[in-house]
Image (tube, rainbow, N blue to C red):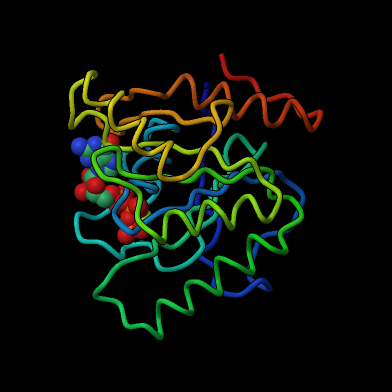
Length: 203
Ligand code: GTP
Ligand code: MG
């Protein structure tokens, strides 16, 4: 993907703060610390477009990033961070739900899970939600650099089983560290937009 421009638009909490619905969006959901913000940076070849942190709970709002003035990545707040109060967690849940439920220009949701761990109950719930709202739910298994290729295929099977994915459902191992999965993810993004009649140049 040739990145001509990538810019942060806004950090939103309420729907009134979302940018206009003029461009298609791809959202990234997943547990806190799974690597959502890092994946955005990896895809656009920028170290610091989306803010990342080794301590969980960094992204607490819905962050919109506009790429090549053609489409947007939407970084959703991470769920499942134990140190956040129940009250705040339920606010995040509502924030994510109202975005998924009402956003007309949302084309697809990528759900990120850590390749090293069995998906949690909240991951299962999120995947269920995504499908309930009518998206395919593309699963990206992050931090693949942390384990060998042999272990990767073992872990991918566990993830598939736990999320009750069909063979045709898409699961991609990826790494923000060594860029594994990058071309495959861009190809998928191009396909998603192509189906909507929008051409995204990826080469
Ligand atoms: P929240 O904003 O808290 O929801 O987290 P997040 O999902 O955006 O995670 P973030 O991208 O901030 O990454 C969390 C930590 O994991 C950081 O220390 C990253 O450097 C690290 N990390 C993310 N992706 C990878 C990866 O592919 N490989 C390795 N080795 N580390 C990664
Ligand atoms: Mg983040």
